[in-house]
Length: 266
Image (cartoon, rainbow, N blue to C red; front, top):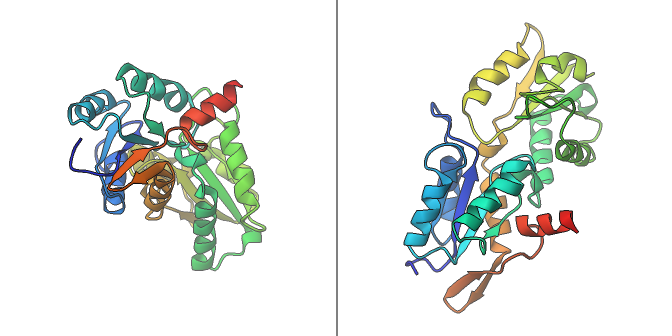
């Protein structure tokens, strides 16, 4: 074992786009002061790679004390198939895998709080505001992903009279059509993105293509929100049992990836 009493907590994201896009590393930096143990990160499609990080974790003797958080806002292949396969291939299939960000307990309430804060800051009426959920999406999409629709429905119940709609960066419905998707005069844009890389910096403004006089507020990508690390740590702590000065992961206890997979296959 290392000097850390708590299990290692690992942030996992899709990729690091460079030029301001290091979402897993940035989240790990914010989580570290809240976690009394090692915090690390890795990427599915860029560096540092997940596979290399798994090797290092095992080399350091932390492989049997690992909790993984997927910084994703969908329930797709990468989260529910590739990540478990990579853990299995690395001999780390005993790791606790927390739910992706969109399924974290408290996530909907967190987003609703940001909606209300934005409405108050702009002095906007909820009844005159369309809230746009903007996930990455896929080029092949012809409709919003079920998990985004479910999240939008849950969010709308906490946002009073505000209209909640979905506009993807890739695929349909597309954010480029936001004027037709929403029916209110104010537009509150919530990027369901891990960080401030190319999609947030370049694609969003291009898709919105704001015109003079339009009332538009674009929030930071959710992965950069200052209250997200506390949600991650709270859920990670729920999977830890303490025995004296040792802390061990409990394994699947509900609200984790393995439990979600088992429920889906039942």
